[in-house]
Amino acid sequence: MSTEAAFRKNERRAALKLLPIPVLRRPYVILFVTLATGLCALPSFVSAYAVTLAVEVMIAGVFASGINLLTGYTGLVSLGQAMFLGLGGYGIAIGTALLGWPLWVSAPVTLVVVATIAAAIGAICTRTRGVEFLLITLAFSQMFYGAAIKLRWTNGSDGMTGIPRPDLSLLGVSADSPATFYYYVLAVSALALLLLWRIVSSPFGSILVGIRESESRMMSMGYAVASYKIGSFALAAVICAVAGILQSQYTYFVSPDSMSWQMSGEGVLMVIIGGANVILGPFVGAAIFVVVKQALTLITDEYNLFFGIFFMLVVAFFRGGVLGTVNSLIGKRR
Amino acid sequence: MSALEIRNLRKAFGGLQVISDLDMKIPSGQRHAVIGPNGAGKTTLFNIITGWQPPTSGEILIQGIPVQQGRPDLVTRGGLSRSFQKNMLLESLTVLENLRVACQAFHPSRHSVFRSCRSFSDVVRKARDAAEQMHLDHVLHRNVNELSYGQKRQLEVAIALCPEPKILLMDEPAAGTSPDERANLIKLINGLSPELTILLVEHDMDVVFAICDVISVLSYGKVLATGTKAEIRSNPQVIEAYLGQHHA
Image (cartoon, each protein chain N blue to C red):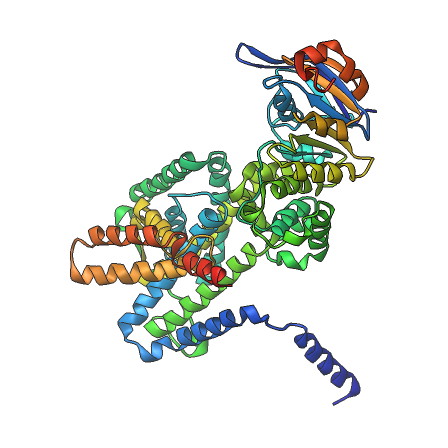
């Protein structure tokens, strides 16, 4: 090894030493490593049904994370985020099944189109607040839902089929296998989560939190809050659209139901259950939501009644959601 | 050129004339108080100056540039900052986070979407300096909702100072504070740069006399009198309308 190479190696080692893991964060790091290992190994030790359930949880988690950026971090409660879930699904269906584009072209084009549509809708919706914002987002969502039902070229209420999964033949595997698709969804979810984490810990993220806390104060600090709210709306929409793409690949199908207001409502429920304003909250909420719903479906046809009771209990005893409560308990202990 | 100039300002809410034909010129570096009984139009005047409410007619110039109504953010960018009568803080954040958000408003980092807030060390340093200036450095990592009322008032002023304004409007900064907190706040405000123009609305005359050089008395939306402390103290109209014999 040359002297220069040895010097660079030592320099890299020294730089790594400058990045210690703070003592207080060690439990989180251990938890993260355990969780990551567990998720990677999951298909090896659980049934195919459990793998399918995990895929559903991750897709719902990505969708709820998009809602969390808008609701939890920016303080804008929307009942229309399912329109972007649906637009993601329809975008990929139109690109691949209707226009014959490859997936790697259709997916980014879909996300750019969704971001553009969301920015335009956001410019209108973010002029309102509170209940008005909730209702105007619901109105836009219902508009797209209605269009999806009426349009012939999207097969109306029958929806569109033939949505391909990614071609992973280069890796010697097929995404049609549940385990491979699980890893694909896990990778995309991890990327979405990483992206969200970077956003919320950035100055842009802190401005969104400031807007949630006091929009007037942020304006008097010198922030043009309208453009930040539109930015948050568009980013949240893109994340929801990613979930929509995954959902349509999972079922090879997209229908107007993916844009229904019930779907938006379920997303908001996941955020509330898991904990708004906490980065992993929506995933925890999605896990609880999907598993409890599945379990109740097996027991009774009236699962909505029991899920309603369950939701009320969570709201009553876990203010701030499950992770929000855990965080505040840890905070009190310290 | 005046730091702040108000020309023939009028404001009416329906049939109620809150401010009528108000003219005011505040030179750079002056500490100017606006006093008057409740309902005299002081807070409305502040809201119009800072772009929160449009005037019915008239003009406001900040360093010679007209205020763009409906855009308080642009008023702040024009060099005028304000603290509020009722605390308007980012309650669930810490003192440092509040100040960091305030400091980054004029920093290119405000457009950053993927880099961590902490990586902009100059913004963090500026936020720490602002805390130190207002004696909040010992509560930097405390959540705002854990602060005393006096500390919250100090933070209000600290946030208003973060954009490094040329003109600072303070709406009753000492309201609701204890005598000790008030004395501390006076000391802190008097310690600010002499180049900073201050426009203060305050009911506590001890605070007004301790901070300001020039006082304007507002009554029913009109300037009753403008003058130095001594002139205002001895003005019979002001004594009758507002001060009473105690402060004369």
